[in-house]
Picture (tube, rainbow, N blue to C red):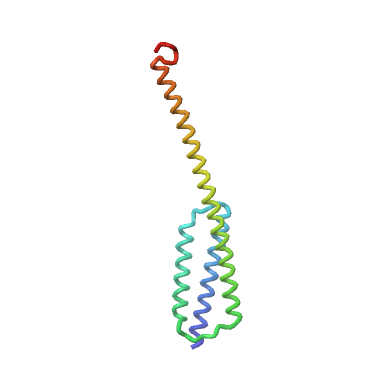
Length: 136
């Protein structure tokens, strides 16, 4: 019975390595402010996690003893994945904050411009009525 469990653990490790590779690749893109593959990254990552959960389900209920080398490798993979995920989240937060700042700045500029145009309109309206050149 050890064979299916060993294969299951091997598949889980391969799955985690794939998730880690995918995450590292995505992080290298967003470091360059490239979020164009965010949806694709999310879908691929979700699919890989779904496979890993299926593997976990297949291993449930079996009384297995995982060797220390396997435990160590799993811990290292989860730790590396957690580290990359934190970097991804921080970079996305930074990009979000920069975008919000740009939007706020654009709205302020638009408001200032509309105020200027509004005053310009009132002046031209007043000039047209003759109230600025003493004809009123």
